[in-house]
Length: 280
Image (tube, rainbow, N blue to C red; front, side, top):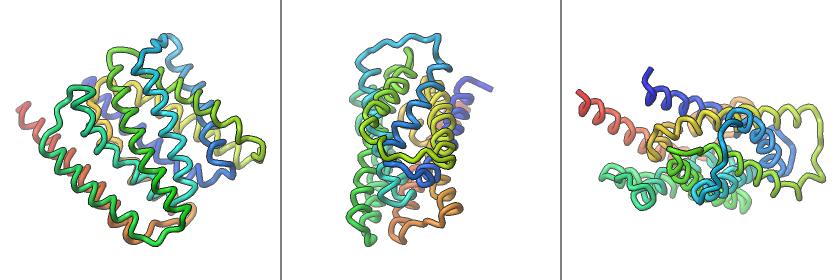
């Protein structure tokens, strides 16, 4: 297996682990900030053990990546608690739009005509999420999910800037920052078996081990490609929640989700075909 294929495999496996986030967040009866901080401190330990031989650079991209990461994971937990898991993850996965818009400026990675077509279609799909009748809390959840997508895009770009350095540092520092910010919300948490098991699974596997894989893979996968590969997550995330909690998105949100996923998937398939023809 070539290094690039290994990186793509690790990226896809990370996305599968991420997809458990919706169901586990719904399962835990804690304040969203406590969930975000609890899983982050466990994940920080896992990530430190995996990369303990590497040194933190404390570079501007590393610190910026840490702040983007902290914002992304915190906003996603809040969104998942306020709106449906499907809305939260699908709106977060509008991230390729922002990656495409910023990658040329920040990374010098060319954005082609296909990318702009994809951006336009994804924007059209996003409109459908706000056509359903949603509560004020659900609307706030949708907005948090979009903001989480912006932060995920920035995180991807700052991680890509560190492809020749130590990108894991952004994840480690971001998790520690998330935990520190959560300390104000722990007073009412119930430490029963369900919550402890749930937060442990979130920290070790859904966030910790997954970002170990992601931190390795991002060194060998371009920023836009990374966001496209991890589109596995928004497909699986609402399926797990539906199977365990019977939660399903509204009709318009489902239409919007199909448009978003189809646009991103087709764009990536065309890129793969073009690359194969070029190599041939």
